[in-house]
Image 1 (tube, rainbow, N blue to C red):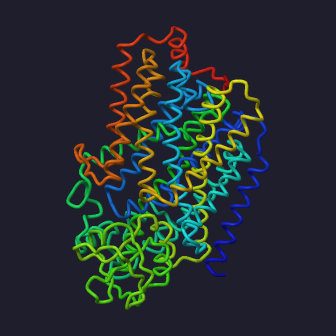
Image 2 (spheres, rainbow, N blue to C red):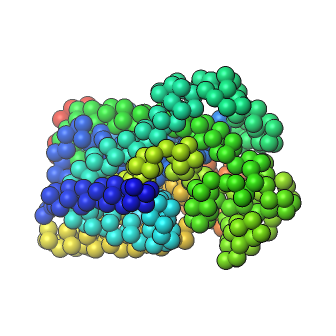
Image 3 (spheres, rainbow, N blue to C red):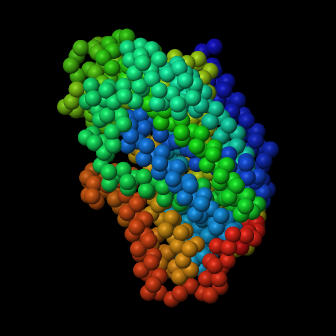
Length: 591
């Protein structure tokens, strides 16, 4: 069977499974809709948390970024992994004991203020919309290549699917769907990694093959990483394993991005809310352990897959006549994620350091002398002629390595599972923030269960439409869009959650001032550097890492304002003390 038929079969089967699970798990009350009834077993919650957390950025982009950035690309690996450990050990049990439906719920009650709840709600929506836009873009990319539809059409198909199972099942349906999606995505990630490792190094364990020698070809017997270093030197790139050298990011920027991803992870509302779905604090700790274990399987494989991809892709394309490139080149060229501009008119692909042209490829609709799609972008003054989008590395490597079509189709299903699982969790955060924290807690306290459920489902629809718009018109690559969401989360939620749990003197005035100043600075910097052409002016820190500075501002402002304002009521201070006692959490509470 052809690749396209395999893709239709496998992707169609997984979609049917997701809809079936959502239908059998459909909910009729708000507790089931917001926190899955609070009775999810720890093992299932661990799998669901892993799927929720491992987004399209983790599945599609992370190995690609490590592949192109080498050592420096591991900041994404360290930041996201460290952030989850931080969340699991420092925050999750206490948040679970607090027993509220949402993060704005926690902020509103801990800081005894509807204004603080409203600011937290706005922050949650900003963070979630930014993050979910990256997921929808990832869905579009997978659809465009493997089902051969336009990226925008792929985004719209993803919008319909995620709306169906998120609106029907709420958190209960999303949880059990995410369990299935974890099984799909981890299988889809591991099978090609094992196959490529075996083919390239003779070792079926990618983590071991990563440090092994190459099995055949011109580099037979050489260590893979040493060979990649040599290729980098020959083609003008930085050495693959070099840290903070020429051609790589400066140390301060790597530190800022890593820290931003770490504290941003710990402040992401769709991950935090998962700890409200288990029946006890002990179950929250146990599910956090399972989640780390399940996440580690993919995260320890990604650096190996990135190295395999870099070696295979460079060998397949560098100094190859365009007329001789494999069929997959043309397929990916159609998606706009791969492009070639023949600067010296020799018909041979020259792959060197630097961007081939300014911006993303814009096609003229015409083909060149060698059959390549012509771009209208202005070529840059360097030797490189090849444009490769980070996002295609994981998806294209099985094709480049000539694996069977069913493996390639399985990778497509895995990419969709990763994007859809995270998108569903984020959409539920948006829906619950508006329907519960705004509509029910602030606007209409007398709303019935039926009305609140209806508002929640309508808000999922609104969230899908907005996310789809930004998925069609993204401000960057999938991983870059997601990185911005982490910056917003780190500068808004992390400081006030930490201080809310561990410092009873933190006041509502301090929390509101801290959130506004932290996210305000971060957003201003991102808008300036991403959309207005301003160079990074704060010690050269890139917009992906500026959330670290926003976090420090939030901490400082919250502390300073809290010290000069009236202390919280005694009941709130006693509640903060009781939350830190590691026992006795009840079910999620609907106040």
